[in-house]
Length: 149
Image 1 (spheres, rainbow, N blue to C red):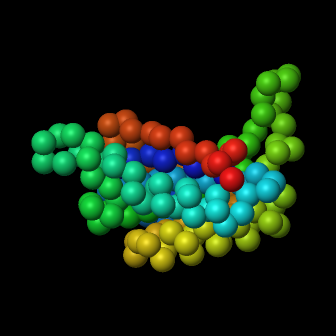
Image 2: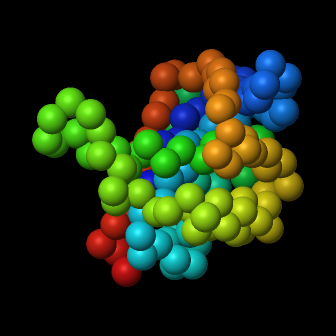
């Protein structure tokens, strides 16, 4: 499982010209799944996202988590995180989880995050989305559970 975590001052998702999700300060996270991902992967990534100390404290040091800041979380399904461009110029998505399974995993992952944090919003799996954000810092962190379990 992969996640691209971005610290944001605001972020939103639009589908079909209408805004469906929006957050203020917090984290916007692109989420992708590969074959073989399971509950351990999701639990690991959820804990990391929610407890990453990437928000500044009063001293200006990145020492606070999303929980410490009571920030919001926007999860965006993103199969292209498993695009492989080592050969040729067109990405291969053969290692991405098949859509039916990935959709179910995204729902389960969202529920896992919502158990730990009250302010969780999402994009729509499989939809043509417009994702806007203002990255604060900028701070961007890549999380990957590959090979951990």
